[in-house]
Each structure stands twice: as C-alpha cells, then as structure tokens.
Image 1 (cartoon, one colour):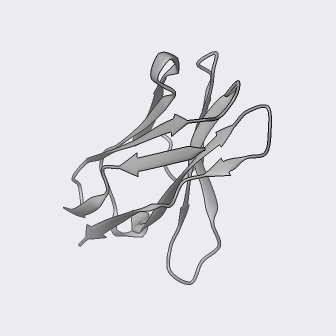
Image 2 (image 1 turned 60 degrees about the vertical axis):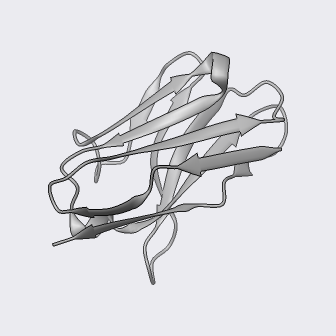
Length: 113
C-alpha cells in the first residue's frame, strides 16, 4: 500500500500550489482527501472527494482550494490558490477503502508573507 504525495514547496502569500497524491495497493477506494498539520497545532481536515465526485471543504479553505480526482489513476489533487501564511503546514493525503484509512507521508507547504 502506498500513498505518494508531491507538489509541496515554498510560495509567497497570494500564490498557488497544486498537490498530487497517487494511491496504489488499496482495494475499492471510496474517498480520498487531505489533512494538514501546522507546527504546534492538531492535524485538521482540509478537503475530501468521494469516488462519485462529491466534495467537501473546511471553512478555512473553502473558495480558495479545489479538490479533484482521477478514479482511473487512484489519484487526488488539491489546487491551492490565494495562499496565506496560515496555510503553512505539512499536508497529508488520505484514502478510505475497504480496509483501514491510509495516510501518506506528508508534503511540506510553506507560505511566506
């Protein structure tokens, strides 16, 4: 089982980044999504998408972030626009399938002011 994330980095406030997460070895994925954890804070849910295309967003990112997915590739994307310094965190991909929830290793997103 693997969740491979990519696309993190350093960006100035107001900029954009696109995260990707490719899943392999997970049977019957029914949803994928993203969490994040900032230094000294608890991990928080960011966005998710079901295999049917239904999406959900936390209030802190709604209107700025867009989640999308490619079922054929078991891949989820997170387009992040209008980034703010408070978006700085390690972003984790998750996948929910027939078994337990799986987590990626995390990718750092740093937004400078």
